[in-house]
Image 1 (cartoon, protein in one colour):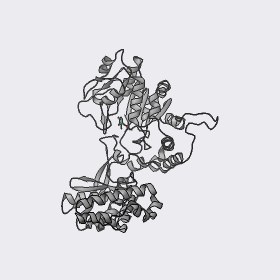
Image 2 (cartoon, helix red, strand yellow):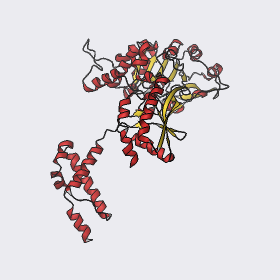
Image 3 (cartoon, protein in one colour):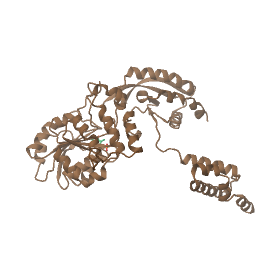
Image 4 (cartoon, rainbow, N blue to C red):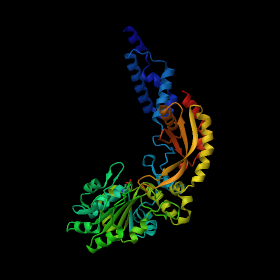
Length: 466
Ligand SMILES: *Cc1c(COP(=O)(O)O)cnc(C)c1O
């Protein structure tokens, strides 16, 4: 016991450590450093209680505190290299912005701006003006607004137009998007009553017709973003549904999910109707995400009839769901790129990644596979292999894009493969792959920083040897 008390007595005071940590105070400030010292001295006391023999020298304490402060300061959101094979990966931040859009967001963040200020009149302006006319031009709509994300867009539309009323939706479209977006629950939280129409695989026009009552607020279609009904199926197309709605004096709305503004077939991608097709077919309002196929910042776009948008923008919820100037600045730059559709596969990162030729990815894979092999041998076997990339984020769920991967096999079994996957995730710029059928696949479709990737490879050897 005496020994323990002696050790405790040898423990320096907070003040003494502080006096010897002026270099840390200069870097991190008095408050943070004293907190870190207290925390560290507490943990030393605990290890003394646990009969351990911690190093009580000022030097050791200083070094521990310095490490702890640096670790607590590490950036939480960091860039990673997405070799998962999913282009629009929700967990990896979805669409990457083009440089012009990121720069516009940066300017909006750093300086005062004309977010809601009319520079012509010097009077208060409206934040939607920065993007509304572009959205209208690209979708053929009369009016548009932007909120936090597409889920918010759907909630705002329904709670403005359908609160306390009924909304018929096909049973084949009661979608659950990952996370917590489920059509029935979103409708309930918007205060409207879902009226299920038809059967899971087949919904006919007469099903909608018989669901319409005096309580009906509108007719709604939901894009089946992450699945496809196949086999004996039937659904009502949006043009026919819009006609039925209009016969009854009701609006017809579509939650497009991803929302596509480009001609995908012309880009050599799987066909997907454009947002403007829905408006041309008589749909009164569409909602879609900013950071899925559109390739912009996270937001939700509502576009369509002016009279409906006026009601939507007056809803106090609009204020709660609005976006900031960084988002609007970035979105505006992204939308401008769509004014030159022929260049999109060069100018917009999302479309560039989606349209990247498999032959180019294959060449890159053979180049890098050989390089990687020199750091992974002899415990791992490295080869190139064809694979299929997914578009992701519930855009075109069953379509895949032919791609190439570096396929890595561990000669000592699955746990080694998982260890390698972890070591890759711990690189300064973490590399995210996917394990598939006993191999770690690095799908190179989205690798646009090859030098960065290659430069950190030598670190693998050390990381794997310990
Ligand atoms: C993705 C998606 C949503 C949600 O969009 P967020 O922008 O993620 O909020 C809603 N509806 C459909 C059909 C979707 O695909």
